[in-house]
Image (cartoon, rainbow, N blue to C red; front, side, top):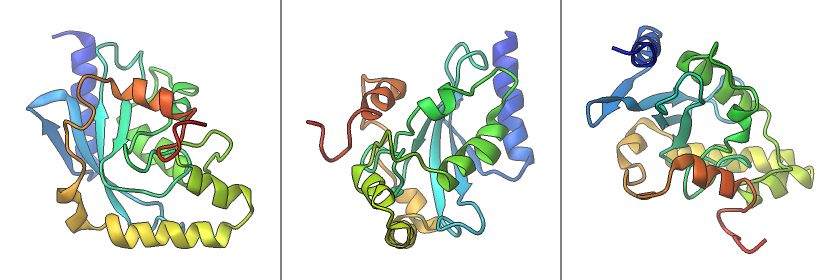
Length: 184
């Protein structure tokens, strides 16, 4: 077994040992679903999302791909695709990080400190840039009530919605364009 395969197994086990619900996709360790809860004392508190994590062959030297499978309202997450702007992880990723860091540091920080200057969801970015944080938080809470409950996890996006296109490719493209207005 290669050291990279062993590292994937160790990282997935760490998630499970820290009470994350983890499901292997097609019985492969390089693609998993993880249940993620919104950070406490934030508009995302109480929300539960199913996250698809794809670990590249070069993991941990290369960052994982992260996709929210149920809807979330956030400037740096595609509303339709669920792709996370990979710049968030790409810029700070190091082989010293593991999947536990993704779920306990990266994703909570992303939700708590959105960056509306490079939006994947223009509506969310607009609410933040026009300084209407209250309206933004109300919309986040509305999405949590509609899409981020335990029962919504089984009703997530189709696994095949991005066939033939790597999640990272979509994320990089969407960091320039919005889900709703690809002509900008």
